[in-house]
Amino acid sequence: MQKITAATTISEILNEYPELTDYLMDLRLCRSDAGPDSILEWELSRAAAEQDLALQPLLEELNRRIDA
Image 1 (cartoon, rainbow, N blue to C red):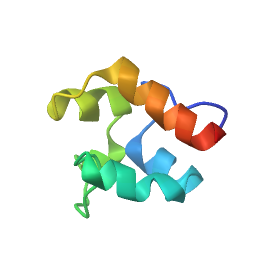
Image 2: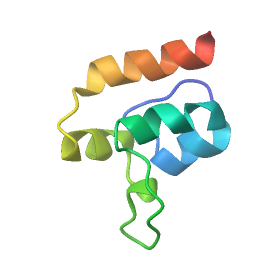
Image 3: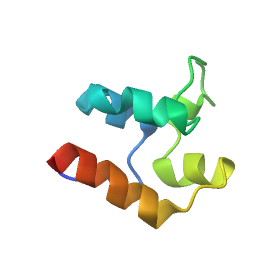
């Protein structure tokens, strides 16, 4: 994966960058639910909207963390 985008799913982020798990958990973007409508299968844009998080700053922070 190159960069994390609004269309990247939470599960893709966790699989590619497991070091982001704690950060995503702190933001309530990562839970242990499963199934067809699990937050893990949502695109980042949807998950951020559900948690009332601003998407652009979130994308910048996630990509900063993987580039560090």
